[in-house]
Amino acid sequence: MSIQLLCVSHKTADTKIRGLFAFDDDAKLRIMDRLIKSADINEMVLLATCNRTELYCEVAEKTEKNVLYMQQVLLEEAGVSDNSEIQDVILRYEEKKAVHHLFMVAAGLDSVVLGEDQILGQVKNAYLESDKKGYIGQVFHSLFQAAMAAAKRVKTDTPMSKTSVSTASLALKQACEEFGSLSGKNIMIIGASGKIGNIVMRDALDIEGVNVYVTTRNHIPEKNARCRIIDYADRYEHMPKMDVIISATSSPHYTITKKHYEEKKDKERVVFIDLAVPFDISPDIEKIPGVVRYSMEDMDRLAAKNNELKRSYLCDAKEIIKTYEQDYLKNEIFRTNRSQIDGFITYIKKNAEKKSLDAVIYKMIFDIKEKSNAQEFESFVDIIANIDANC
Image 1 (cartoon, rainbow, N blue to C red):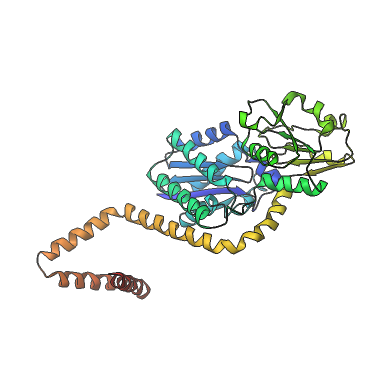
Image 2 (image 1 turned 180 degrees about the horizontal axis):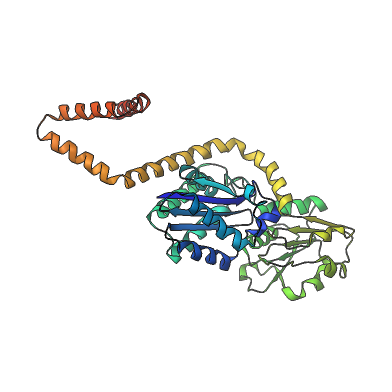
């Protein structure tokens, strides 16, 4: 049994490369269906967000062949034929390092926006999707539930999430800085039915005096009735009166192009914010006079500044993660070595019939001393001392 992880994230890959691995639901299912058919892969979870794509697999045997196959399936689904450029951006973790990485990710400690709230829900959804498909077994049940429990503890016991700044709020903050105030401004949100777009919409509605327009093909909940709903097909017709246009869809094509927008432009200054990977808004739109465009890469830079505000909470968050992570690892050691533990108990019972309990315990300690090195035996004695101190 071995836990293997392949990861493409904001730490090593730019927006263009991350866009190749921003798999939609159909692509994720194709990847998992292919991998689960391998005799060596027992369990898996595929997490794909705008800032990271992570493939967790529990394999029967840790071999280079298994990892290369995992990588091959990801590259083929991403449409990458020449992987020489991609090799350096695919991070690989295994065993304890893979476990630690998941705990950090779930708690938002590996995110662009430190302590972000959305990632825990994304991890949970990826886990549940795999579970629904039957791709989760005992190993990943224990692992993901422990990681999610640790993340919830970080959120409740530290100010990390209470002071979190999401990508959505960063986008609105940047738009506000461009104009000085958003009061009286018209904001169009494309993709409000999606996760990020919905958060942008809710945050925008909390700003006094802002007029929020939403383009969507889906129904907007009644509680958001303050939004002015626009049919997606008519989006260009309404753009001339917009001050801020934010797009956050999972579309494989541009939602806004320079050519179509240029024909409709009316206002002297317009701010475009592209929160999609791959891009929703054609990058060359910023060539139009008076147009300012921000992308996820710009949000990354803004997030780095905001993260400095939360550094003081990081140590406490990591201590919580460490406690949960160690508990998980100890439980796994106990579970995977249950037969040896049962044998050890049998050994004690068998010898206790012939000797006093003191003699059996001393013999056990002597055997441990003989079969361990000095550092291991010292750690064992420290454990005994701690047990004695707590009795």
